[in-house]
Structures are given as C-alpha cells and as structure tokens.
Length: 286
Image (cartoon, rainbow, N blue to C red; front, side, top):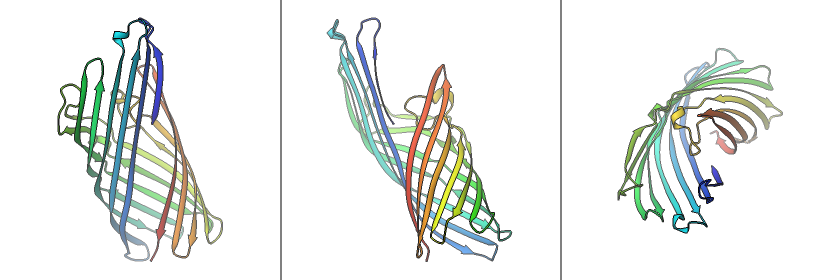
C-alpha cells in the first residue's frame, strides 16, 4: 500500500503533507506426504514453513509560511521479519470417477517479527528508536471443496474456506520503550471469523496445457472501529483469477493472475480497494 496527499490548513493556510507506505508479504514453503488408503480415499499431512516481513513508513510535514514557528516534520518507520511453522491435514474422497470431495485443516501459527523502529517529531522534540518483537497470529484455516469432471477435458470446482481471524491482536514489545510513541502494546483487535466462497473451472487443452479461471467472495474481518487507511483487509472483496498449467514430464508449472476489488463506507468515509497479484508455482511428482 502506498498513499500520499496534501491539504490546506484553513486556519493558517499551511500546507499539510502526509504519506503512508506499508508492505506485507508471506512466503510459504510446504513439505507434505500423501497416502492412498484405497481406490476412493486418500489422506495427507505436512508442514508449512512461514516467513513474513512487515515494513511501515509514515510521514507528515506541516509548512506554514505565515507562522514558521508552527512548522514541523514527523517520521515513523519500522521494519520486522520472522518465521514460524503450521501443520496441515487433509483428505480426499472419490465417490465415483467424476466427483472428488476434499477437506483440509491448517493449524495456523504464532510468528515473532523481530525488527527495529524509530520516530521523530521536530516540533515536540521527540526522537525515539528501539528494537522490538511483534507477535503475529497467523490464523487457523479449514475448508471443504468439490470437483466435478463434466467430461475428460472440463472440470468444475467450488469450495468453502473459513479463517479464524479472532486471534488477531496488536502485541508489540519494545526493547527500549519510548516516553511518547514507541510504547509497548497488547490488545485484542476484535476481528471476526470469515467464510470465503469460490467457484472455478479447469479446461484441459491437451496433454500438456491446462487453462483455469475462477471467482471468489472474501468478506471483511475487521470491525468498523478498526477500518482505516493503514489496514489491508478491511473491505468485502471480490476476486477474479485467470491462470494455467504446463506439464513437463513429472513437473507441473502453474501460473495465476488475480484481480481483487471492493469498497466499504464507515462514518461517511468510503474506502475503495483494488489489488493485482501474480503467482508462479512448481509441483514435482515422484
């Protein structure tokens, strides 16, 4: 997320510039094993290694030519990263050759982001910096999906996924606690459990090329009191995905393009969301 704007102070005619930039990414590495119990039932399990990185940068500049004594700048930056593990359990049931039903459960994880933060305010004389540890609860997820092979080339799919966002909190421990800004925080964010619904299709163009498309709905987990410019998951979103796969011997290469949008109005303020994502994955079958 990258936002900036400049407005006028109507009382002093000063320029007020504000900017906020944040980035969050999660890299997931999976090791899993699966076993076919019989011709209809298979089970599997594995471990996800989760690596996350969160950066934030907020700036404000107040410039008043008429009263220079009011001028100030404010800067606040933080950068943290950490890793954790979560377990995965799944099963797949095939009632017949056309229909498959799958279920999965992921335990979620607690990740400690270790990093550093600093903040300055020239008018108030604030200059604080410290290393910190932020506890992040990667939520538990589980779901069920259905795939129906309409014919040898066309497969239709749908699934339901539930995410336990209720564990989300803001928990930051500063090694050197500041007097004003960099103060320890520990509070529940009151996020809600969400249910995500998806439908999709896969078309087998030939023995090597697969084409895919899908649509999904993902409701917001954040309550009205938590909605702000600094949140990334606070609107009800819709997703359209387009992608494909290529089989090369035992290696399947998948790519996906995803577009998401949504909006929400809170306290007469409208929040409009748009995002784009591209993923590339490889699966090797022994």
